[in-house]
Length: 274
Image 1 (tube, rainbow, N blue to C red):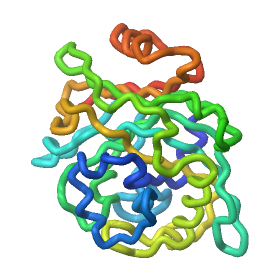
Image 2 (image 1 turned 90 degrees about the vertical axis):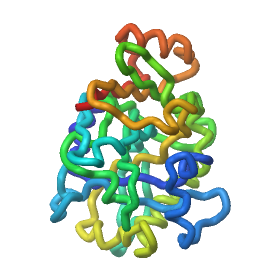
Image 3 (image 1 turned 180 degrees about the vertical axis):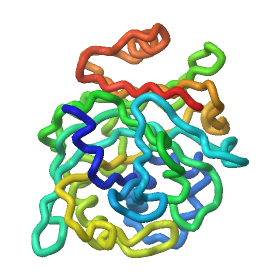
Image 4 (image 1 turned 45 degrees about the vertical axis):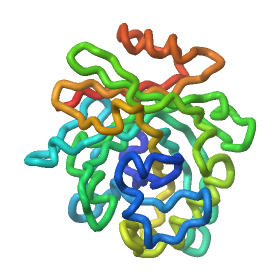
């Protein structure tokens, strides 16, 4: 599946869908006033709205590079390794009636670690500030026992020739909200999420009823090294979503170390930090 076919659809991220990530990122306090059911994510934030005025109208996705912001914010950027879902949106009477999976890939939802009134402000600072792997794997179902249940998500950082694990090697099933309940939750938030704290009223951004969207479903926890680290020019960020039945962690790491591609169906994002 060609990811370029999704260049002109809105894109979103999910906050708080992996236990412990918000605390590591120093962002748990941003959501103290946001009501969320126990064990559920905090909400959805936009990263790109085609045709929008201002920063949300700038396409931030690159397939091979990550551009740091200017000024003091350049020293505040962390990668956020995630699984991205490519979905179809079915509409009925002006509301999202269903969210259907079409594909998935590896995603870097990089973020500036600084106070901001809305999450989106920290997420899109221009072109090449997000990243998708060039391979999107088709996906017809997100039901329990489906193909994604075999996958893990892991991230690495190469700096000065040294490769380190950046995001914990995590089964995709370890997301707090997943399978069919995730698709239902996304539809509810797209329809009814209120302007609250760091979150935005999403229905107002979808007035043209787009046929699809791309949604990063949440960042994994960082390794101890990465939790306090910030990206530097010259780094290489690698995010891999791999099928445990075809490759193991040690094989993934060895292939990443040697610049060797993984078998088809195991998307890998490689971004050079500039």
